[in-house]
Length: 103
Image (cartoon, rainbow, N blue to C red; front, side, top):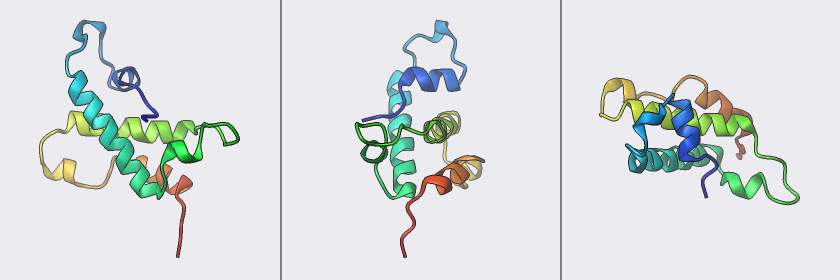
């Protein structure tokens, strides 16, 4: 299950209403990929740790990390040296704050 909606991502990207459902399939795909990426880096599935009964609330910082990464991937769709580098500034730092470290 996604922690962000397509409408959340459209707001992050500053989409205007005139764009309608243009690119919804692509937005859905990059949103799912961004959440999966963040979860792999965290070492856990976000919904298994946050937001359910008896759990802490979903941290807005993790939502922001997913949105920032999805927006970056949407805006940089081609394989370039810019897109191939580390995630955008801030994403890695947010993930590090919530990551489960094991040794």
